[in-house]
Length: 146
Image (tube, rainbow, N blue to C red; front, top):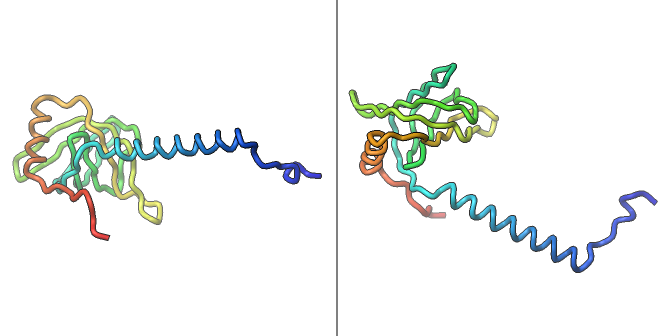
């Protein structure tokens, strides 16, 4: 008899432990999604330049929140890269901030289409400038028609 034929169903106590673990994981997943969207995202399309220690990247923002920005670019920096961002609004207005690349978006072919950058070490001036950008931007709806 092979090992796969020797499998037995879990005991009642083991089944309860499995159910409790599954439920705890589902609750943790739900909290994680909610925490990721703790701040409202606003539509904001401006030119963005990103400078890392080794490279320069160019793109444009799709949306922004108090905590970070999504940047559409075909050549995003690697996850974990510390970047200096310059958000250019209008002809002469720009905001310089520091951030960390937290995730990369890829399309169905696996090609990069942008990255999510979390703001870090914001100066008071940068916080005010971002707040002003948010106040002038269009808020994404919380719910969508299905």
